[in-house]
Length: 103
Image (cartoon, rainbow, N blue to C red; front, side, top):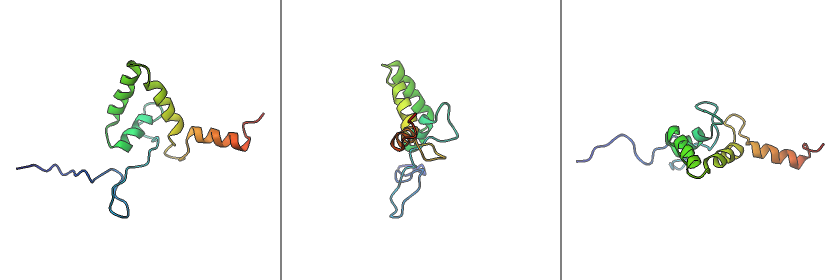
């Protein structure tokens, strides 16, 4: 006999869409459950895993070649903030297009 755990692969934290398909939550940096900029928490929530696993992966990537720090910084720049829905890189690009960065 097989046991059921109450979880099916069709379930996700984001609920289901109009056609019954499952969807992931938006990839954003949350305001809560953050240690630095919220990149690991946002990735973990999006993937449906524990944030500790993502944080350990960033540390391992940093120690095994140094890729963890640039990847974290890229996530910080490119992932939008949960509250504003805007990313830092998007704000800079918008400022450069509108000329707000001119002296």
